Amino acid sequence: MTAEKEIQKLRDLIAACKPGRMVFFGGAGVSTESGIPDFRSPDGLYAQKYGDVSPETMISRSYFDACPQKFFEFYFDRMIAREAMPNKAHVKLAQLEEEGTLSAVVTQNIDGLHQKAGSKNVLELHGSVLRNYCMDCGRAYDLDQEIALHEAASDGIPRCEACGAIVKPDVVLYEESLDGRILEASINAIRRADLLVIAGTSLAVYPAAGLIDYFSGDNLVIINLAPTPRDRFANLCVAAKVGEVLGY
Figure 1 (tube, one colour):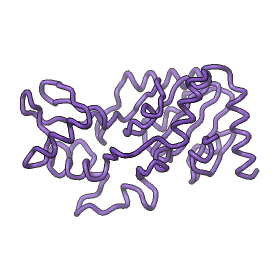
Figure 2 (cartoon, one colour):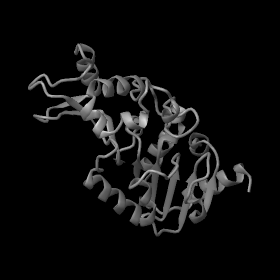
Figure 3 (cartoon, one colour):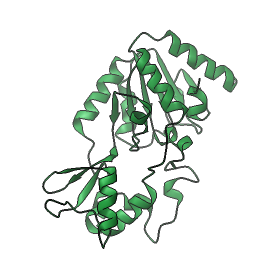
Figure 4 (cartoon, helix red, strand yellow):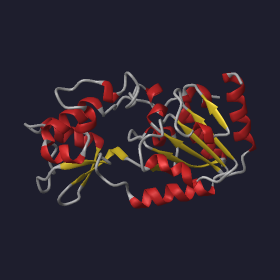
């Protein structure tokens, strides 16, 4: 089947889907067309050099606790994309939700682009750079406030204006657990779905990748440039960019 026929088949599946019975599960590849690098591709975050510490180590909780100054230097340099805008995939998903077809977006991304495009029911498995909180008193800060605290600090570590403790991004680092409420809501959404579209993810990061096991609906679709370990279970696999597939 050619890419064009695969894309048309997906569009037919979406058109035939019962209201509220489609769920979208996306990874970093959903945002690459917005200029945000993914993690595991040859040009991804993990392939980049940043001193003598790997990026994967830098975004672990143990490294955050041990070396907060270096963590925030890396975080603000490589993981914040304030100017990024939603691409065709984000826009189409918001449209499908508005039309009543899509019930939820489950995302591994932390950039907030789904909400910026207009999606309402977004389940952020790994948190969001848009939310930050004081590790002591719990005071909340938005991204602009977090950046201002970072820029004002002599050591680059954002500290709470109320108590002086570190203000941590509401992002799930390696060695941290996922939010149980978000995980449960994601599982319930996938369980109820007839059509599950998985896109832009290698399906290599657990427990997020294991969410596919809760799907028992009729049609499983995987959109990814590279093969995934779950392709053999899919009704349809589309090897193309997510925005090109959904941008109609």
